[in-house]
Amino acid sequence: MTLRSNTIFFLKGTYHGAIIMKVCITGGAGFIGSHLAEECIKNDYYTIVFDNFSTGKEENLSFIKQFPTARIKVIQGDVADYDAVGEAVKGCDAVFHEAAVASVQQSIENPPATFESNAKGTLNVLEACRHNGVKKVIFACSAAIFGDHPEIPKKEDSPVFPTSPYGADKYISEVYLRLYNELYGLTTVSLRYFNVFGPGQDPLSPYSGVISIFTKRIAMGEDITVYGDGTQYRDFIFVKDVVQVNMLALEKLDKGFHYYNVGYGKATDINSLITILQNIYNKTIKVHYVEARPGDIKESISDPAKVIRELGFSPQYSVEEGLTLMADVM
Image 1 (tube, helix red, strand yellow):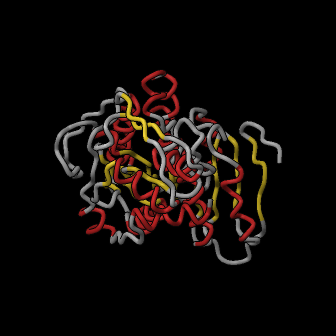
Image 2 (cartoon, one colour):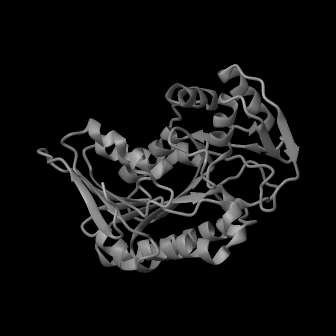
């Protein structure tokens, strides 16, 4: 399979039933986007995967083989290219905007480059949707918008105080979602992901989360490095539950601008995470503690009450269950 910029490189199968909906997923070959694409196909949606394959992988789309009659189109393109985005979203009912440079550290090292992909990329998606009759945009926002503000847990109306260009990009994008609803009537949804983990996260990627990195190293019996003292905690959420929230937003929300915190509301500190992983893999490894990095957040936990109340979100996994499932597929 040869990949060429802005070129459709395969159309899979011929679907013989009624097409319920046509959706586009930017970043659809990435970690979260590929899980979302699989769920859309299971729901018989005509699914457009749009990805520049900088971090997305063809292997993340291997599930397509399980659906020989699926309607899926894969397009290689970049959200920073407005014309390419416009072609991808044409004729779609909804767009899941997952594409981003999802690295706090890279955003600190090169703010203009991450702004181009993240903030400008979101604006391109919104503008392309406005001009191509798309009814709804569901955006992958981030808990990084809250930064290190001391209010815990984070509610939807908690103070926004980003501590990295990445967090700022995500918040700017959310502001644009609100404006595109108010000015142009586009239905927009911002899902503020907390710490998502699950199969398909590349532990070798500079954008990878702590769980995928630790999982690989502990499974191999290798030492790990912790930035800080390990008492910092996160609200980890399994990727399949994040997909559930996206699908609920697609199915239930009509008109308006909506925003939700997406997490379990349960804190797991890094030292506890290491212990859980060592137990799962029956390994004891050496942990090296080094100075915390600039932009890293000490405490992050969501209050999921709103997403549970308004969308009916019902988590299907615990952190330990998700980690065990990851171990099963390694």
